[in-house]
Image (cartoon, rainbow, N blue to C red; front, side):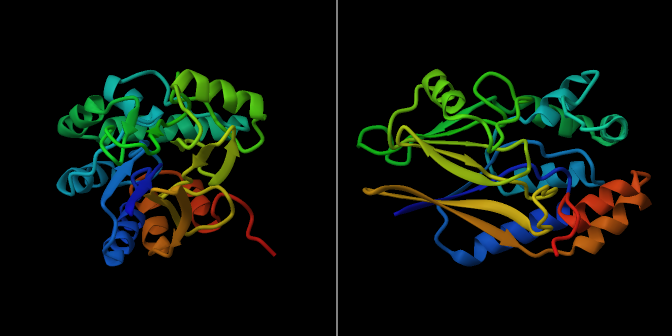
Length: 253
């Protein structure tokens, strides 16, 4: 049995990242941790999050936030559902660009677009785990749960996936899993900014053996009020704090 932990969309939320890493560590059976990008934005610890990932030697890929901050692009590539959300996205992007260090930018610029993980080294049969942030072409594409099977089939063909393989991604901050053509499509959710109505940090445990790969969604409590209070204190909009408190949606009844 090989077990991986996949963490995505940390978005500069250091308390959430620390809690997730502590949960992974206490399990004692996780072979490797990989991140799926969007390390910065919306919270006040972009440099600290990158430093912790580097300290732990956790490899990963570039999200849209990472590549645009690294290149000083004009926009983060985030989609807003209202003019106010678009405005907030710009505020976050400008704040992050002004506060990341040169060392953080250098690291973000070094991240690859995609990773293919072969648990058995490629010389034995077994699944390939492909990780991207958005889809196989752009890290700004939202692969949402309502995408038709035909969309996912085209994604698999472009990636070169076969039955039994696993394709993992993030970007939407909403976890889900679907099997199409024998391939598992897994949205890993978000460590630092969930949008599915659950404020707990989310990550994926992926267990691989001769029988294939099995995914488990893990939710972790963290000091959400610590993160929420730090957001306006750093000069970021208080709306970002409310997103953390509510899990991105009105509280469930």
